[in-house]
Length: 520
Image (cartoon, rainbow, N blue to C red; front, side, top):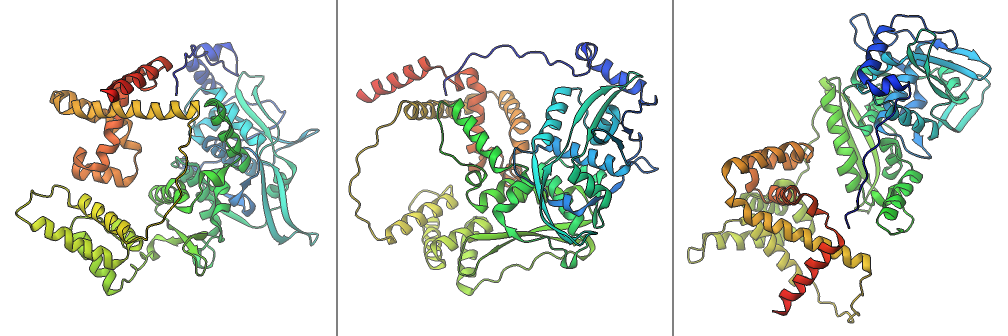
């Protein structure tokens, strides 16, 4: 809200000594120089190419089935943490480890871990914090199968990782050493059921949720029908995002403290209050990425509703070999819906959006408004309609409001805003004024300046935009209302620079000028 002064960022120190901190390249060269030297005998040393095939590609590793759908109970698992854990567990599966008074330990050269996991940074603080996430995170799973003693464990809870150390061995080589909690170690030694996980595919994945899906696919791709377990969709949130309820509450509380507010207690379920948000932010992006990084199977998300309800209740995934995959049949429409859909698409509305409007406003009303807008377009006595889609939506909303029964509600007293709420409102108005100014001055910019801004927009904002926005940009450029709504706020923020986050004095001056203009 109000701009704060920030101090200089402290230089990162190295966990492996001052030489590495002052010269990151020296640390990398040191790893390479000592790559072939023997490690000390304190822990089992994982071979340099333990996870690689003869051609140099990463192997497919067999993991216990219990590892396929871990549920974090506390804290959170970041993308880097999950990838590190995948490789550290794979190293543990590739070797028996060394039994010590403190448990079973493994060791791997840092250069090997970085190369295999695709970690191309010398930021050892990030590596340490990611490993600490694994130590802080409790996970749980169930195993309905009986063990050798005839016992069943319907619930098991443990840490993802035991002790961990960064070690410089006697030869000067940098290594990572870790131990596995007892329950996980037992699964590694005694598991009978396993799934295969391709580490080569794992290195191509950029999203935490996709990496979690990769494990699920490995477990269920050979099951009858290729279906995963079906769960209430909210139970998938910690599995796919790696974010526990406790972590979500902590993050929201921290955000509130930074704003000077203490929000009501809420967590993951508040973040994804409805399935459509979870599907938009996690499920659809995860499935799209996984289907693009491998060509063996095709994954679909199957959301189901309870009988008599319109809300999504359960979620599962279907895994189909590529050669057997057939797109789902298109839903059949009745004659009235088909007529409404054809009329709306003829005006230029997208099919998906049209179906949403039909479901919300009924086919009859949609047909009536389409005919009304069609007559307006053909009417030569009035000006040309530049945006028939916008006109259609406006008229449809007007007609829908007229059909609703008027409700007499008692007048409520005007709510008095708190200081923070008033500042938030003023900040929004201030930024809206900057956006309007940038939009008004845009046509006056020289073409070379406009081209430079557009290229920056493509790199900084459009590259991370949803596919629908990228498609609209390729088709219509900035003429699309959807793109204009994204471009001009970005442009205003770039042009304003530090003014985008104004000081208290700037906000007060803006408010006084606005009040003075109203009096005139």
